Image (cartoon, rainbow, N blue to C red; front, side, top):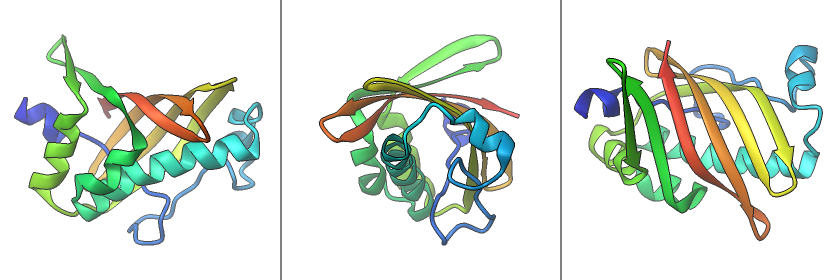
Length: 153
């Protein structure tokens, strides 16, 4: 489990990141096309959740990331061919014990259908690269991450 938590990724939409961030709001045609079905309002809400998630890693503080997640959220990946599913508290514990980390990301794909969304990001956390996939649900006016699934590149 320690290896799994060490592989957790983060992304960052803030200026504190060491690496420039690209996302669906920029004019990269291939990136914009991947998010063409998403309203600017939904994209802003989704990015807000992702930014909270990332900022928690950047600051090494789970209290920053916690509002991005729904109660009961999970984090999952495969390790040595075995499925690992953990409560999101495992991510929060990781943030609190490892401290600050530089991070960057770009949104590779996003899709919204009413009050649900799927988002894939390509991220770098420290020196490790990841593919992260999120499912989100709109709760009132806020988007909440329900699950995070990741793969180390």
